[in-house]
Length: 432
Ligand code: CTP
Image (cartoon, rainbow, N blue to C red; front, side, top):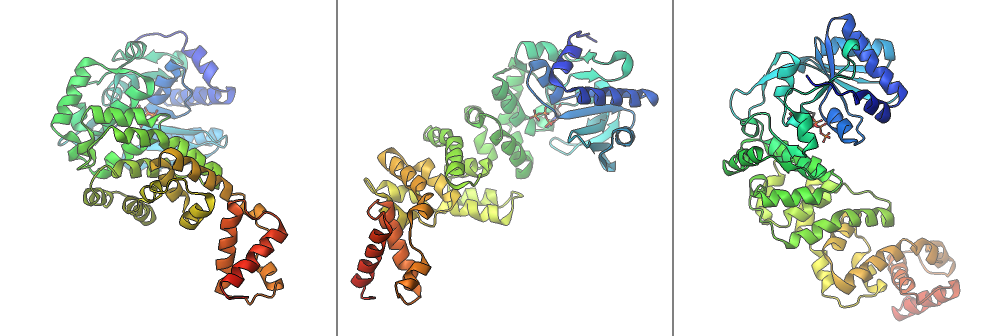
């Protein structure tokens, strides 16, 4: 046991008064039942690193569901109990969520199986976890409120910026931890401790990740895509030779790096232009899957729990290559681009912007931005055409489309110019 006198200060700095009261409340309610209650996991790690995190995970040496019920009876909110796992989640009225888990030990009947669970003490609960930096706890019981519990030297690993396993079978028992190791290493700019690095490379050599379902891997990949700088972890997975075990047939070439670096700026640009926020994972995954052959990519996608729409939109992205088609145009103007890209979806737009290069890229950006101003620039619509005596029909769509292209080219600005353009166009087609 190691006393860290400044934990109370850190809690005071990171949490608001109401949140502190809540933690004290959890400790008091646990005391009333002679249970132990401890903050654990990412919250403790990030508190010590000074990183904001409000993911409150509590381990109860006693009954997690009962403690959750008591908390909610006093502080309000809803409780959801998961009997099977002996866990519970409380959503408080202040919008804070607290996860409670009864201290448990895990047995793996065979490598990569889902574990069998048995109630236990705090030490064993912490020992079943992934890395020492995630196996620290802070006591919430009143007499020891704020005491840092560090059975496995997690605090010195945090100080030394090390990701270290608690035991050598960890990656084999739970191969998702291979991906978690990379994610934490890159997120905090830590190093894999040498023995952990060795065990990791053995697990990779044994192709441990192939023993778990693509969905479990997929969940971890999504967490990587959600990191502040996912590309660092994606590159590191390549360096460690992990990709071929995740997505069969994927060969990591350096050229992918350029497109990956563009993903977040392109998503921001598309949101700016269209108001649509694309899901990051969808765009990252498209870039990555384009590096593999289509049959392997589709076979892999078919195993994931994603929606039908997401699956078909990903498959479409793999088939299309609008960027290559545009790249052949030397300096396309907005009118010409309008003819090719009028119906381009936000995702299609992102893919074009990701893969296009050089001057054409500038032109495409300019076109997409200009296009958002069309409603203000266009002075004519079906009503005006009607007033001009033009018989309604498919010709309306055609002439307005031609007008849009001309407006985007800056050729026809005023109402008069636009009417003249429409007349000339209709005459040239023999409609007028
Ligand atoms: N954990 C584990 N093995 C896993 C997943 C989780 O040991 N495969 C443990 C770790 O102790 C972790 C805790 O469960 O700290 C909570 O998991 P999670 O919320 O996924 O991780 P965080 O550490 O909170 O990470 P993040 O900051 O990314 O939320």
